[in-house]
Each structure stands twice: as structure tokens, then as C-alpha cells.
Length: 156
Image 1 (tube, rainbow, N blue to C red):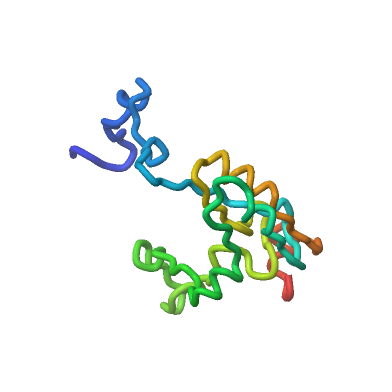
Image 2: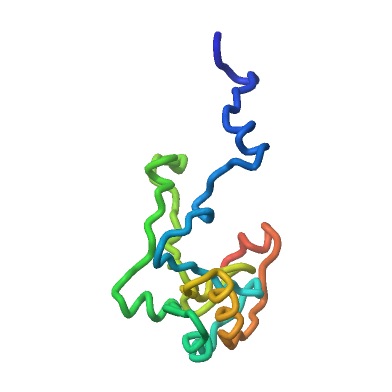
């Protein structure tokens, strides 16, 4: 048998990567190219009472600052997951598993540390990062469920 469980698979990309010759999308630099930065939640669970992006929108090099409200105003919905096509999991009764529908940017509340809240587009990555720091988010922290037994409780 040429390939099977427990056998190693040759890794042809390793020498190139170990020599520092890997190429990534971040290495591309095209004329007029913009860069983005995601502002993420520092809270495990919180209601978003308000977002003020005015200072970020006025920052040098900023092309756009987007929140869930902007996404919704453009008539966009959730981004469909490819998981059901790639790995069609079923429940014991044969029905498809529940697939949560999540918007790309937090809609009214954040549900985990790192939940995307806003997206800044600017001429350079540094300009996008600097502008993201100017976004003021008013969070109202909520209790967070941090273990599996509690997460399985109704209303968790």
C-alpha cells in the first residue's frame, strides 16, 4: 500500500518555506491596493450600545469604515458557510446539523473575545490599524458562559 492510515505524507512545500521563500497574499503590492484591519471585541459577551466611527473615517488614508449597520444598509446578509458542502454532517435522525447564521460583523452584541465589530479599509496596513484605534465602541458587558455544562442550560 502506497498511502494509508499512520503513514507519513511527503511535504513538498517545506524546503521553500524553511528557506523563507514562501509567498503569501500579504506579500502582494499592486498599484492602488488597499489594506484592511478588523476591530475585534475585547469582551466575551457584551451588548453594543453604540459605535462612533467619525474619528476613524477622518483619519489619514482611510477609504472606508464599515460596521454591521453599513453591511445591512447595503442589503447584505450573512455569509453562507461552505461547511455543509465540504463536510455534510447529519444528526442521528438524518437531518442536517444546525448551522448558526452569523453576520460578518457583530450585530448588536458580541458573543466572544475577538468577535469582529468593525472593518477599516485604508491605503496602508498601518493607517488601517491606527484608524481602528480611533473607533469608540460603547459596550455593556453581560455575563459570559465559560464552561460546557452551563452552556447547555436553557437560555445560556
